[in-house]
Image (tube, rainbow, N blue to C red; front, side):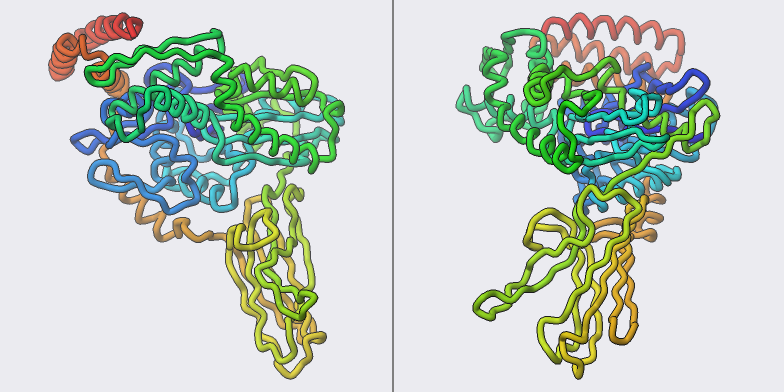
Length: 563
């Protein structure tokens, strides 16, 4: 079975395309949204999803979220007795999603189409594929999140020439993409974005305002208190979408803090974030050479796009309101399901070709002679410009700086800065030259080829001799090699992960422990409830467990409403 997966910063979803169209599978708690959070308990068991999210408050030192932002780096996070790379944490989320899909269908998942931010770099895309491999599935196709959103909205069924702008503001990333349908081809004209801009940053702004108003620093709060505060502020952020003013009462030790914030003040403190959104929007429109009036639809996706200020930004810039009739948290996953259906050649889907673009400019370092005869080095010379439709192949010719030069060191970079120091180095290729030839006869033709799988091939040819050199950039610095993937796959297989059929009870206990942290006045009662429920679980009496689970859940619901 081929599934579609939205591996998100805040939540992840899984589904497939069947006779009823795109269908998302619920997790063990009955929700199609699985929080992208991993935690490890005192016994070394791995906890994933809602239970892990609640443990972000009660056990912050043993829990982690937002690790999608670290994909493509070698960063490690210590949970319990061992450390995890971002690929491994993502693989644990994927394994949980796969278990949900197999429980819903009774079929084995063998392959997935996974959505990624359009502005994900080459390294981040390869790290996502590695996460799939660690989860035990094939990931031959990644689909850009805005493209998936366009499929969910049925761009493939629109008239020829239809143009969509997809505005995707998720928990941790922001993307904007301009697409057009022409003769059965969904063509991406331009993508731009910010991999470090999302709903979490709006939450950070609220937290900073709360702390500043009460002359507090983050160091004045324990990890548990910060976790409690951020959870409460997340609710405040959501309520500000509906109310002009929201009040918050927060207990900081013996101190009771009353705080209120208006929509107007919230809009003011997050205005710098909105201004950051304008740059990718303007860049994508400029690169696509499209005017606002030439767009047929503007689509909002991503949970953070529900904030009214986002719709107002779009209305001001484009003079119209965007579309948002599909649940913004589910749009990308539904589109990934369509892409999975296309990959499995589902006869219910018309043959549609999806094109992609190279999200970054790729080039090399050169030196130039200034007016005083001095060589200025570190200058970036683009070979493939950003938003070139892939597969793409481009070439340029370079010469050594002086006569008698024995080698030409071609360094390959990715980025948009005119100076290589601000771009990302991908690799280098040393070309041997004949020092007896003058520089004018030592030209080297350099060809970059970037394919749909994100593999960059660099070829260099010394024109005078015909000698060729080749560099295939399949592996970026900081990424796992195939040998490391095999080693870490074996280690992941050794982890103790709570069975899916225990997730419902595990989540209830984690929720109660989180409420214990938040409600000092109810701690004695909660401690009694938790001990009683654990005792009933040990009895292994299914009927009694189900009965007390409902009773315990209702009691926690009532307590939660008292916040």
